[in-house]
Every structure is written in structure tokens, then in C-alpha cells.
Amino acid sequence: MSKKFLIGLFMALPLIAFSQRVQVLQLDSMYAFPGQKQPSSNDLSASFEMQLSPDSIFISVNVVDDRLSESENGDRVEVWFALPETKFSDYILGSKGSQTRIFRNSSEFGDNANLDALLKNSDYPNGQIEYEGKKLNPECPPRENLSEGRVFFGLTHLVFDLKSGTARHSDREKYEVLRQQLEGLPDDLSRLARSKVVPNSNGYAMFISMPVEALGFARYRAKEFKCCVDVFDADPSETNQSALSSTPNRFYARPHYFNTVKSPFPLNIDLPSIDSTLIRKTGLNLHMFRSGNQWNVIGFGLGPLIYCEGVVSETGLVEFLAYPIALKYDKINSIPGKTIGHLTLNYNDLSPFRQEDHYFLVDNEIVVSKGYSYTRERSTDFVNQPFLLPDGEIAFVLYDYEPADPLGWGEFGKMADEFVYIQQIGKNNRQLFSGGQRLEVLHTAALGETPDLLCEQVKDVEYAWKEKGKVFTVNVKGMQKAYDRKFVFELSSNGEFKPRN
Image (cartoon, rainbow, N blue to C red; front, top):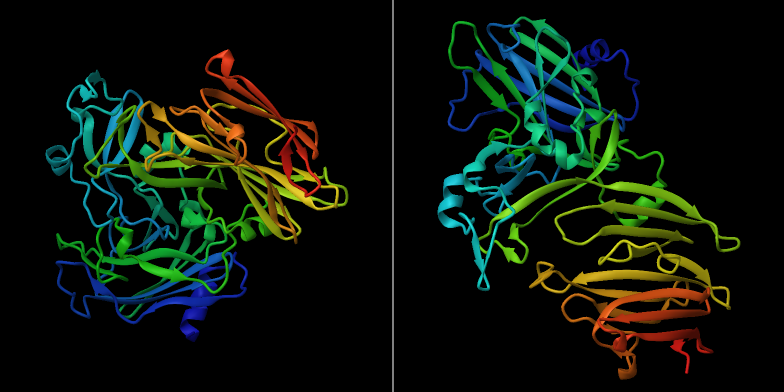
């Protein structure tokens, strides 16, 4: 690192403590924007480097510029950040009532969100939909309410001029469509970033510092993000601005072309109320955005556009959805001498099913389950609870489901196979009971592998402990009373739950 850089950095960063810091990006020269000529070296040229500490981002830009303009839209440096997964910002927006929905022509990141092509080539409805001899009213926005637009999900755009010493968080209006989905807007990050400009004989050096919170969107304990640094020369007497970028394929708000930043250590993007060991061992790749002066966990994804119940776009049209994820962490102390960490994630994604994920940390082992059940909300002390076996080993009653067709939608709406199973964990890991059911359409349940445990015309299945860890009951409610059945399962001498004769 040069002496000049250290002096400038010290002047620019009086409030940030010096700590572990590494260089992660460095360019001796920058690139012209696509379709533009490389400026002459004395008119505009630039080099830059980026350094990271666990808490901060430092950017040093050295610019050769024959005339300096200090106005807001004059000479400036612009910094873009993005989540590693964010590829584009162009979408097709559609409104119906107070809700705005976000579409793409396809899930391919290289496709532009082209409204004309969508209306011409897709099966987007124009009026009622004919489906199995019935006319259905689509639930999606009408064609006339569709428009092309930008959505800055996972994107942060900061602008630094030569005079103010602070950042401007630009393009914030492009977050607005996310307000409903994320239940809030990203914070204005202007106050977090600082810059200092040192003029010299042939231009200037700009030193930028900011805490990692200025990323705006980031992964939990991130070691990777995307970045783009642009330098603009806006001479007062010239109409067109000269510009240089840290990437050779600089397309506006398309992070697919941004530089990838990789850190040798995790950044301090944390959730202090959650056991970090549990999150790390689950392998969860939590994404967050900065809102309300704190990190908030979010999910996002592309899924098939469903026009109305049972009718799915078959021409590659997809819907984008971002959604908040509520995390709850607690400790289970019901097993003598054991403290079990328990993390619950609740969210509503593009799936029609309830989403509640459970992670348990037991003696350095992670146990995974789902919220029970997808058909209806119900409280239960049976599923997602640990218990002690007679030999002192720990077992869990767990729940899972799988969509019964690739889209998770059947002829009459949502449909899934449900599984309730009892799993012994630890050194003698094995399954002690397994039951499955499909309550939609087929109305069947199988409480084991023998034919006499197969039930038909099933409306609902309820599990309950009669004697915790030893005996439980299964009440099968039929579509008609004649199909009602009741089973009692008991822990057998071989350690498995078997039906009581």
C-alpha cells in the first residue's frame, strides 16, 4: 500500500478503527462503457482499489481529469453493490387493486423483460380463461395494467460528488414496489458512507469509507458480494459525460456484469439474538436487507405464474417474489441434562403451502423438520418435540411434505404428500415410525407398511401422545363416519413403534 494512500485514508476515516484489512479488488486502469470510446488519458483515466475489514469497506479512486466540476451531477464516483444472486433489475410490473406483482419473460437471466414479446408470445390471459369446460376469471393483473420497469431488489446505488463528503443513495424510488413484499423499504444509506477528495495537479484522489451495513442487501456473515465502481467526468461545457467503469461490460443496473468481491473472512453482518453456531451448522444461506436500522432476513425466488387456481403459464412466464422471513430462536430444556437449540423460520413464498422450517441443535447434530401441517394451522405437542427413549437416547417426532406434482398444484388446488416420522438420533440413528398421507384429491393415509394400516376416504389425521415417548394414538377422520379409524402405537421391545393389537 502506498504512503499516499495511507495518508489519504487516515484523513478520510477518522471515526473507523483500523483492524484486519485486506485488498480484494485492484485495477490500474478502468474500462469505457459499452458503445463509448475510451477517453483520452489526460481527459479521463482512473485506477482504484477496494479493501475490506470485517466491519468496513474502503475504496480508493485515483482520477486523472483535466477540469474538475464540483456540482451534484458533475464529476463523481458511483458505487454499486448487489447480492451474488441478483442478475438483473428489469421486470414487467402489473397491478391489480393495491397490489403490484413482478414478472419476467422467463427465468433465464439473459432475457430482457420485454412486454411486447410477452403479450405476443405468451399465454397471458386476455379476459376469461377456458379451463376444463369452465370459464374462470384470472386473478393476475389485466393486460392493460402491465408495464416495463426497474426493481432494485438486492441492489444499492451510492453516488459521491467532489464537494459534499457524503453519499447520495440514488434510485431509491426503484425500491417502492418492494414495500408490500418486504413489509418495509431499505434504509436510506446516505448517512453511513463518507468520502474525502484530495485534488492534485492532474485530477483528484477520492477516499471512500463505509460500514458493511452500507451494502444494503447481503448474506448472513457474507464472504462474497458484487460491486461496480464508475467514474464520471462531467465538464460544464460538454453535453456528453465521459465515463469509466470497473467492469468491461457495464450495463445499467445489471449486476450480472458487476465485479465479484471475495473476502477471506466473514463480514460482520450478523443476527446477535440467534445462536451463530446453529445457523452455521444448518448451512442456511440467509439473505438480509437493511431496514429500520437493523438486518432483516428475507427470501426470494422465481416461480411459475399461476393465472387462477389450477391454471399455470406454460410459456415460460415467471413471477418474482421477495418475502420476509421471521426467525425465532429458543432453547428446549425438556430432556434432563440437555439444552437443545431450536431455530424456527416462518415465511410465505411462491409455494401455495405453509412454510415453517425447524432446526434443532443436539450435541453438535442438526435435526430438520417442517411446521405441521400444510392443510391447516393447528397447535400440537406431538410433532417437532424431542423425547427420551428408555435407553437414554434422544428421539424426535418430525414432519415433512413434498408437492405431489412438479408445481405443487393439483386439479383442485394445492396437493402434497405429508410424512410424519419418529427418528432416533445420535450414535444409533434410525427411524422408529413412519406415516404418510395425501389428504387432497386421493384422501389416503398409510400408517406403516402393512395393508391393514392403509386408510381410504380420509379427511384428516390427528396424532397425540397418550404416554409421551411410549404410546401415541392416531385418529383418522373419514369423508364419511364409516371411514373413521383409530390406532394405538406402542414402543416395542426392539425400540420401534408398532400398532397395539
